[in-house]
Length: 515
Image (cartoon, rainbow, N blue to C red; front, top):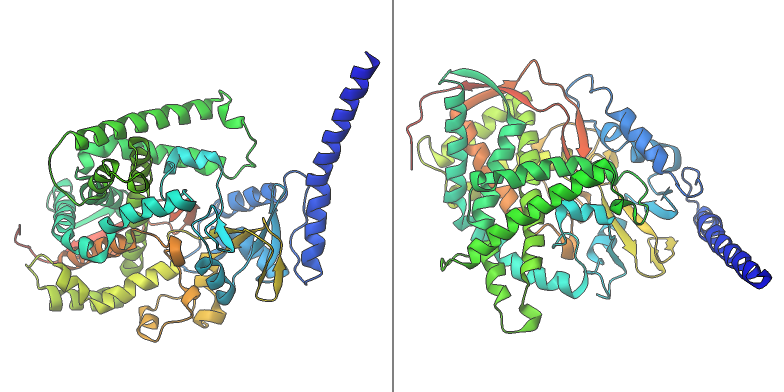
């Protein structure tokens, strides 16, 4: 009996010693390591790190909207970086739980990290993508965005052809059909009035959902509407959950929030499973993403084969990302042009000169819209869809003049880099598309879609659908910001307007229906 007690006490002592090593000694050693190199940061708190402060800063930032339509948004959208960089410099150390995160914003360092990032799992790079909390899988699935290593490379190889530029150009007529249906629906819902007001944020989500459904899955928004609705709800659950310190096993507890997330995930899984099955049961030939994956499922070589479960997980990812990224991006484009009549008119003149008034824009037309392209780039600079990127060191590494231990997470504040006056000049927080007419800045000073091996696979589609939608809208309407619009950019996985985007449209003239 005494022996058992002694063994139990020894086990408890060993556990407490190990815990104190992880929670107290390792963070202290890491802090001292960086302090010796002149890098400070907010004070580490045992177990939780700075997670509580991050949540409080984020909650306080979104309580009040911005006083005016200002693009100086870093303090509202990424308050931790804005506050801590002001106190500790552009490179500083902070903590998420017991994990050290080093914030870096120097373009040369960012370039090295993103270009040296391997696909993970022994790809040979010095950096790899961080493996997020399992809760993210509920929304994004276990697809290309989360995969690492050989599996990531195989999926990327299979999916990339669906989104290369030549393939995207072939989809322009399909995207044009979606754009014209959206505008006709606006007319219908507003009974043909010459002046009307709508929340474009909601409308554009339906538009991009329709496009990703058609070009990636060979269906339509109406057929997949329930999937999008469920993902919208799941996004709010996941967004709240990832701000908390992840406690292993907690996601399996039957809390109300967890139970709802489980139900949503199962329903999405069932709906996508049916979609995949119906695609496998047809003989139609298509080069959309779903068909490419279905063909890969039948591949003779094991290294090129993809299983049904993997297809379902990829569909989850692309349904969400394809809709969310494109819709939020195009929303900010319209907000910016609605607030700047001069740039709107210049863009309209270019669109009408190149595309005409009646002709449906084709891929060749869209390729000539240089000013529109600069407007899209400037929008991505001021309002990038993803406001930060994270990576992790695979080994002890020297980045610039900083020695970084293996396992350190790196926080890359994309939004802050895009607004940095040292990079972009004193007018960094102003809307000036002409800055993109000059020679390119440093490669890593503008990274709205990432950089390197893991650059966004769908960026060609997102840019083309935005250019096309904007061209169609400019030809039919003059638009201005509504007096009811409240400027309140916020991060909810992606950067979006907290209270929607009410814009007033003025019909210019009748446009003949085109097919």
